[in-house]
Image (cartoon, rainbow over all chains, first blue to last red; front, side, top):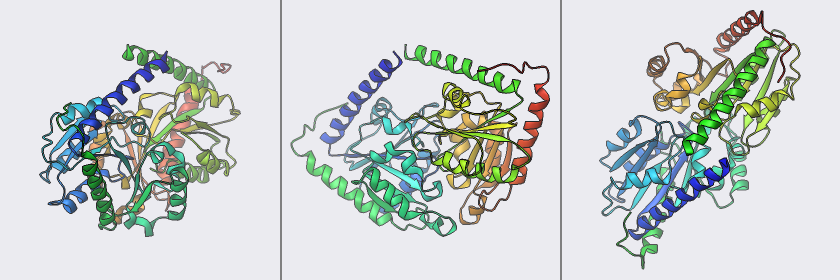
Length: 229
Length: 229
């Protein structure tokens, strides 16, 4: 019976997620679900991204946290449309929360939406929230054993962003090992090493993002542009 | 209906947790539920702890992970009794998993059991697993905003271990802020700053642990020593 209830919840979530994705696709908006441990650097990455893409890409951000609007406050400084979702203790975003947040955003002319999920390597991987792709931020200070210990999130991610590379000289981090483990779990995943602190690697991340936005716009052709949520 | 099912699961969990705690109390064994983000340094702390307490304290370890026995393998090197629980994707330990693990351990003469939970700042805080106290490992590389963003786990922790202090000079970490925030959420929580890499702060942590073990032995008097799981 417990399993039955969980199945129903997931089915309902997947239905709403598909609805969100169709809605964003009809507008040619690329949606990224940004995942990672607490403190891996997801919001810092967004801050750096907004500095880099200003003028090139129009983006909006949905911030997921248990409590506080700390992350949305950091994003709002960049004059970017942002909605904070507080899960009130919940360990992940779900599609229904995102649907509510999208209704609060003016989507006119947007190129992409980045949805920063709750800091958690486990539960968010189980819920689609309408994204086109998932990307996971993993900081090197978390140790190189994380891909094998939390494989689902890496299996589902099109991109792994290995952050805090500036701290590499002060750790025993085995970079080759983590590359090998990620490739073993998900041979298709791209891997970008970066440091939000020094800016190293950000060009590659932004180039990846722009390529996905371009693809999404190309796919828009022929879609119904009048759909609504 | 969903809420009803969740309530039933939690009630059942709490009943088993209470049973475990009574069982360990009857043997004078102190049980610590060790929590923290992925990569905060929980297993490194255990490794350092075993080096420090060898000969003084007899401990056993229960390791919780989604997959792999990597952490248990690290512990087993110290000739300490260890059981690995694989949750198979589950985001936290529950009391029933711990009950099963305890049956595999020889508890004769033990002073304490440390139960290293799944790396996650959210879900494990909601499930008692028979512990006397919870302690949370928070690494400074996670940023100083974590206590306010994940308050439940800090509210429930008797001790916060602020790890990776050796990296402090290479970050912008606001130590005073995190102290203030933890004190605001949980004025009773002790805070120990440490580095598993350099060993700084380990004495204070071990002293805290020994004091709790002493208290537990004192509380044992008058308890039924024949209880079983």
